[in-house]
Length: 244
Image (cartoon, rainbow, N blue to C red; front, top):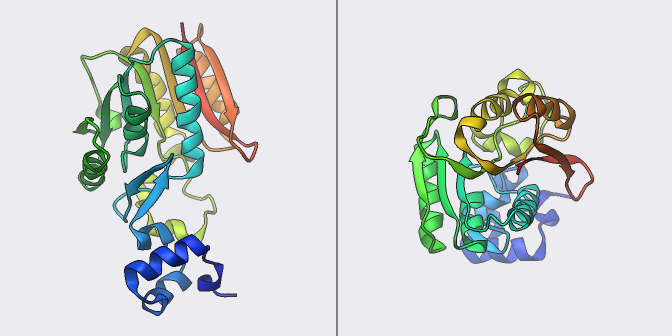
């Protein structure tokens, strides 16, 4: 069975509408080129986001991060939260939070100008106001304090086996040094300076990283409630740190 036979009816319809014939993209499909890039957008949390090789493809697991984060914000009565999205990529996290909770104020940072171009287009298309900023997480400083720090940083180790289609996505949005942990370690280290006393940290994590990240979280937030939450596949996928 070839890749064209594997297409869902919806994807087939969208691709034919865009290209006229699947023959035009057969070689790309056979080489595992992401269908989302071929279509040019992806539905995420009910919203259509532009998506191309400049950004990581938004995934179902990240929808779970947003769903759980919104639930915690409501529980903490932080629906008007000041939010920092670290490593925004396509802007899917920042924009979706703003769509679902219109009263939040969101700043979204990324090291890639290309990614920020995509994120700004998505914010414009979805009619939300986000403060986007070109910034390196490892050099980031802020005079502002936030109620929510949210991130889906790169967390794949360089020697980890991945799906062949991932080779088309930006490497800096996927792979991380220190067995995939370097971004988490730094974010947790600087987070106390960035957050208000009552606050929430929400991060997507690799399914094997929950235990070690909980240990790191306790080091910087000894009095916080630390939760490792599972995705729909029942794999550890989210880290939440609740400061009350």
